[in-house]
Length: 112
Image 1: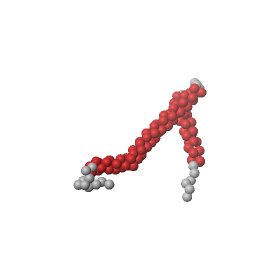
Image 2: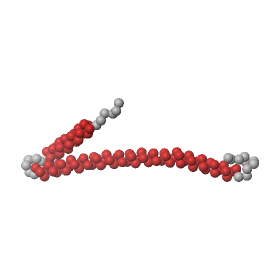
Image 3: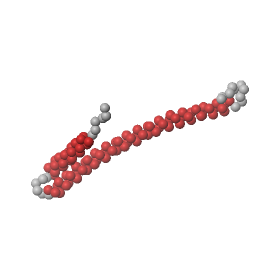
């Protein structure tokens, strides 16, 4: 316990040590936890943004690969570049529609 300055010659050092201990406890219990939460939020947002960007780039690459595949398969049989683009959009759209339908079918209703 901090003593009276009139009866204790070492009261200034004890008071400073007590303040330092209280500040250390507050920092350990509050500030460190807040830093962890903020880091989690920031890294989560960065991961989400990168994940969406990678998903979009992957979809673009798949669509372009289907376009090239259609052009290679058909050769000079009348399917030009513009038609291969539309056919690739149709194929990728049907693929995403089918996958979305399968995921919707596997969903479960929340427990009530």
